[in-house]
Amino acid sequence: MEWFTAPDYWPARLVFQRGLAIVYLVAFLTAALQFRPLMGERGLTPVPRFVERVPFERAPSLFQLRYSDRFFAVVAWTGCGVSAALAAGLDSLVPLWGAMLLWLVPWLLYLSIVNVGQTWYSFGWESLLLETGFVAVFLGNDEVAPPIVVLFLLRWLLFRVEFGAGLIKMRGDECWRKLTCLDHHHETQPMPGPLSWFFHRLPRPLHRVEAAANHVTQLVVPFLLFTPQPVASAAAALMIVTQLWLVLSGNFSWLNWITVVLALSAVRFPADPPSVAAAPLWYEVVVLAVAALLVFLSHRPVRNMISRRQVMNRSFDSLHLVNTYGAFGTVSRIRHEVVIEGTADEVARADGEWREYEFKGKPGDPRRWPRQFAPYHLRLDWLMWFVALSPAYAGSWFGTFVERLLENDRATLKLLRRSPFPPDAPPRFVRARLYRYRYTTWRELRETGACWERTYVREFLPPTRLT
Image 1: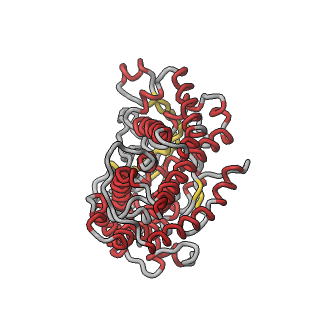
Image 2: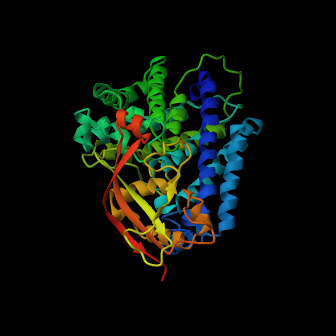
Image 3: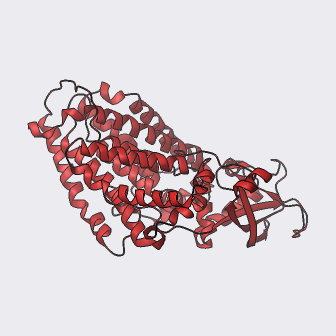
């Protein structure tokens, strides 16, 4: 079938596949380096405890069959290896069926991690990576030209990411309709980056322009993805520019980068495609069958998007095949942070010597400037932002986290930037206090060198010790 493939998109497929492999690599590396203290056998939310109460059909995973920290490490590092091989182009050196199986490996391995990841893996970019990764299995390699229906599925996914995010903003918070959300967002976002202070201090009229441009990019431009070239490429380019603006303004894990990768699949690059053989019949049948399934499953996110009760970042099936997306349906006006401190004093006095634990990414010391971590994801730091919004987000893991600090647990301390206590002298008490943080003004920054100013609000957790 001559209509089945689009040879002109051979460069777009190449760029997309290499970019997706790099995102996979970052995701698996994040899992490999953080899983043990978060959800290992002695983690804050142990996987063995989770699989005991959640059946396989609700959360299909290799770890439903067997779990050990060593096995998890094998899965995560194998994912790193396969992703690196794909980024280097291994899929172009094997037969078509071999390339499909090769792309299926990271999807299966990451699905196994996400489905037992619990609160640490509850973010929209996890499902986005899985949905993108599943579609990529059927994109082919150098033996065939890119299938048109798979390219369409990638655009349809990009459309839902952008349009869903635009709708949830317009429905969720009046500040988006008034174009005032960005007066607050750069200061109150989950994890500011090194330039976030400067973005916040931009003139307010420019914030209005930012918000209006966001609405155009998310509510109008996505429809242009389905128009003829070069309009579709221009629409994708606008989305890429918007995502790179977000990359500069904050730390949003790999959400922005995978959206960029998706947009690149819609760009027609000026390059002559190589001559390839016609797609084999079995490949056409498989691709069309999978495409029909994904289009059918899309009725659920479509119903969600048109609903007045639209929800963000929800999976409608345990395989994360077709999902709904969105971000910042509401924007906080005030930033709160939970500051954790410990003391070696025999008696926990309010005026005692309390030493502060420093996190890698979340604000702490007002004089410490935020760093760039994305696309790497600091999972504990992100959850601490939610805890500051409401104690309900702490669940049972926060108490276990405090216990690990009281034990000077080595694996847990690796999640932090610095512990104020030596390895052989753990604190006797740990407490948590809630502070309000705000960015300093230009004058305050020059006079104090601090990018944050913080004010004590209340006690979050009273002094606690091991029993």
